[in-house]
Image 1 (cartoon, helix red, strand yellow):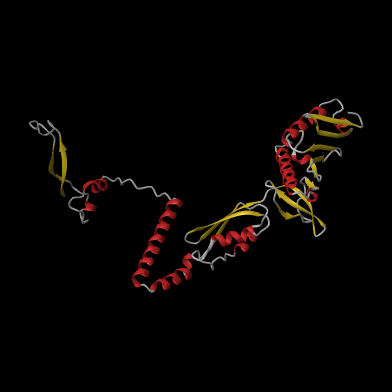
Image 2: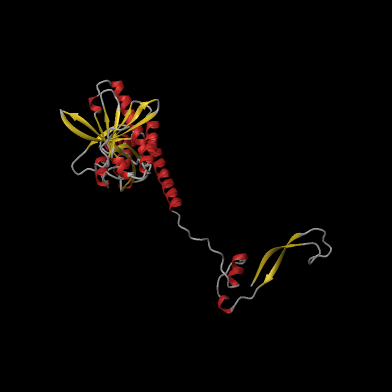
Length: 332
């Protein structure tokens, strides 16, 4: 068998008189094995045939599956299909409504999956049912993300919600739940009510018998009639709670039992282990909290330790010119 190939010749290589290299066509004779003589092989087999005859195969492209690439290809096909449908609708004018109806009713764009993230307290089933989205029935074209978000935030524990369409048939829902840091005692229809309060001071859900209640309780705030005093006092309460959440070993958040606010907006703190009051007064709550940590640290480190603290009658953090008064059974 004969075939032609081009080879590059350098000066002095098969052509001693040549000054520059050049391409030359030459005919190569190749004897095929007997079992290949009957095959109808191409006249110019080139590189692939030579590799085949030598018994070695060409390097294969690695078959690597990538979900990201496949998803992009899938979306590209969808965009092309949607574009063609819009073009057809424009060409035929009145056919636009027909195309829109077909797109909404086709199974291809029906919701087959609802992906929910961010939930902890609220069950996934409640979120899915409250969204109003029906699997294999609701169309992604008819979905109104704003309306779904509005329905989701109507759930008491949901603070914010974001809904996105992931074409062609997936809905992604991300929620942010309220994070309670305390309970607030108030009156509703002249009846006492305990409600959860988040870091922004928003009461968002009443406490039920089966609910978690191991939080500090804010009392007296509902008796403050002056709006300015109310806002100022509530702000100081939140500062105290947030400082306690840093969980200093001498005054962690779980050691706080009650924060009482009187009609003047003055704060009084009570601890879980001890019944004596700690008077914070008004303002500078953050600085007073740090001083209280120092005082408790000093009391714990004394020889009698906890026994000494149990003998404390009260602690006044707003005594005189940034001074702290610790009263021990009538003695200062």
